[in-house]
Length: 325
Image (cartoon, rainbow, N blue to C red; front, side, top):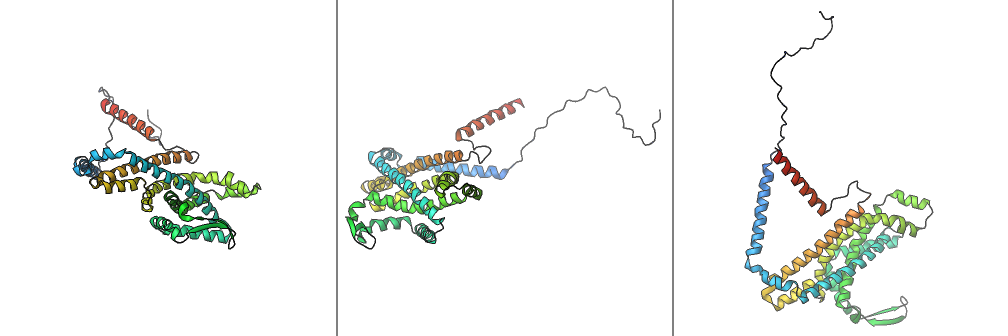
């Protein structure tokens, strides 16, 4: 039977008695990256050499390290370090909030004074600030409270009030406030301008706008950054030794002068304790950032435990696939 003109005729495969071959899945091989493997091998060798040197070099004196690690004198210095860091963190944050509000104020005097303070304290090394406060009594032997440029109600001896702990806390707080001010100011500026306009449109007082609307939203940016700032503050406490306060580092220095053969173990003790403190703050920082990420990101970053579970699940699935092949 002939086909009408213009009709396409598809070729028909001739019949065959051979059975069709089953479809075989082809395994996709990952791209080979020799450079990555070479870099990994080099890093592993360097890490192995470093660990081997730590464990086999007798100069580290790990037995003396174990002796000093939990000694009461070391723990007393650790307690002083924690006290100085805690007081300075709170006072520094409060001072930073005031300085940030002054920089954002419409008063040119407040803006100028706040900017000058932040510029000066961020430029002067912390050790210089501490030593200046330690010798402050040479400039002002007595301090008085009264009418400005007028009579004093009462006065007191500055050297009796300014103990080593007070000097250390004040010095660290003054320095910390300068950095905290920029953290707070950046957090306030990160709040959308529409929030300020909406609060002003409702006729709310300025103080209510800041405490109830602006500042709670700014905390999402302020808190993680300031927790990160605490890590630097903990390490900065080692400088209070120079104002005669025996913190963790100062205690180790004193014990090293008494036992010169144990200088290296004592420095290792200080190193490990600072690693522990900063690691704890880093853990707090992770969970604080995760908490304030709610509502800002669709999926929260996984916790270390969740990462471990996911890694084990992926490993078991990979082993099953390899066994099936």
